[in-house]
Image 1 (cartoon, rainbow, N blue to C red):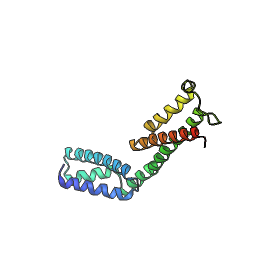
Image 2: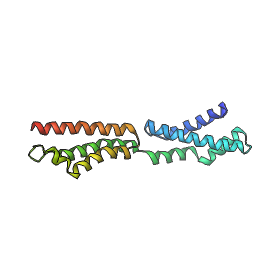
Image 3: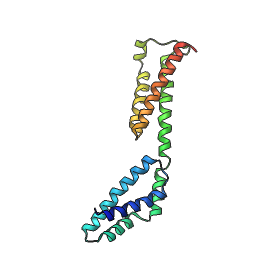
Length: 165
């Protein structure tokens, strides 16, 4: 693709970026996806015999008005970064609390490990704590954060109950 055409696509994407207020990672993903689609549409126009300016104009028309596209993308993707972060924090806390009540009796004494390992509820909570972040969080850093929080809270609850605070 010609340098001038790439600059025009960059300018179009920059105008779209101005219409959005998303977290940096999601915004970059969306703009990269839009770039690929725009470049494909321009290549189709060039293959159809249009010059560069006409091919870019046709591709831009197919996407719609910049303000409308930017607002639509903003509306569709706003808030997901926050929801992912809240879920990354909530899942391990709930699972660590559930494990605390499965591992320790209400009086704070630890159940025997053979008895604990035979409980399906123990394994269910452990598997949920490990798989939900992996399957439901689209970003690895959130899944990793959830696992670290789960590990830390599990150690904290385990040691606190063993010390009988």
